[in-house]
Image (tube, rainbow, N blue to C red; front, side):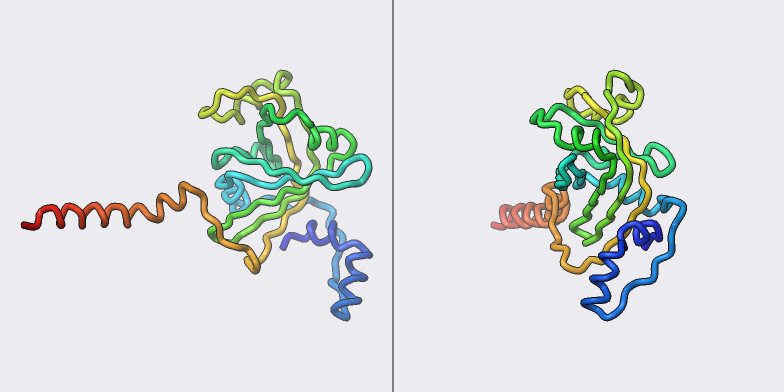
Length: 198
């Protein structure tokens, strides 16, 4: 577990709750530097086809949004810096508006088949794609004709890997197709054998 993550989240109230329910609390020392992404985090981020993005509204309410795209649509574009393209959606602009007041974000990345999750915290900003054409182009999905309207950029300050407990394995359509392909081939072989019998 990365030190900055604990130092940020283990507030006095959290430590008090630990003492109340478990009789003791964790010892946490201040962490002056961000937790640096390692090749493990970068590789994991690059394989994700979705994540959850949490922001906080100006009236203090959390807002959680699902983001999806082809694997790798969330890109590591610099040292501890992530970015992803924002296409036209329902035009509510909740995450974008929230970030105008409070730049804190949390990202929750899941690998359901392998029961692995990565939590990231950072500071985000929303850029107009027209003002950042090169960055927007580098994040564009070539499989879609949608126009990038904005770019979300996240400076990661901390992360944490969670244990697999209570993660229900789920599989994408592509993963299911890959898993059952040998069965389809075997069925086809058996059908040929049956047809060739007198």
